[in-house]
Image (tube, rainbow, N blue to C red; front, side, top):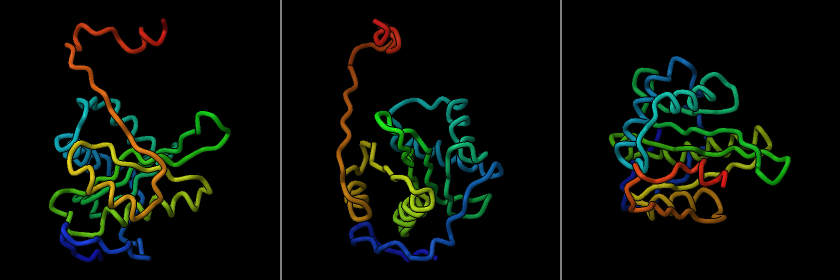
Length: 179
C-alpha cells in the first residue's frame, strides 16, 4: 500500500510494486466520471461536456486507444491516470499522452500521484512509445510541476491566454481557422 507523507515533505519515490493500480474497465466508468467532476470543480478551465467526457473515457475503458489506471475499489476510486495513444503531428510515431492524473483530496497524503506517473511510464515501456505528461492547472501549479520534475525530465511548459471579451459574441474558432 502507499506510504503517507506530508505535502511539506519531498514525496517518496514510487514503489517498484504498482500492483495497487489496475486497468479500468466499463464497470469503473461512473466512478471515473465522479473523479472527473471533482477534478473539474477543483481546477477546471472549461465547462464539462459530459457526452464528450464519456466518449473520451470510453476510448480507454473499451480498450480502443486509451488507458486508465485506477487506484481503489470499483465502488470507491481514489485516484486515476487517463492516457490516450495519439499520433505525433509531424511524425509517423505515436505518444502516450496523459490527459489527467487526479488524486481525490482525501487520498492526497499518499504516493498515488507518483505511483500513477510510474504506471504511465510502465505503459509507455510496454508499448515502446513516449509518455508525455504535464500540468495544466491554475491551482498549486508549482508544487505539481515539482512533483512531475522528480519523475520525468522537463521538455517544455504550457501557457494559456483567455480573452476577457464576452464569449457569446465571439466568432467560433473553427470559423476563424477556415478564413
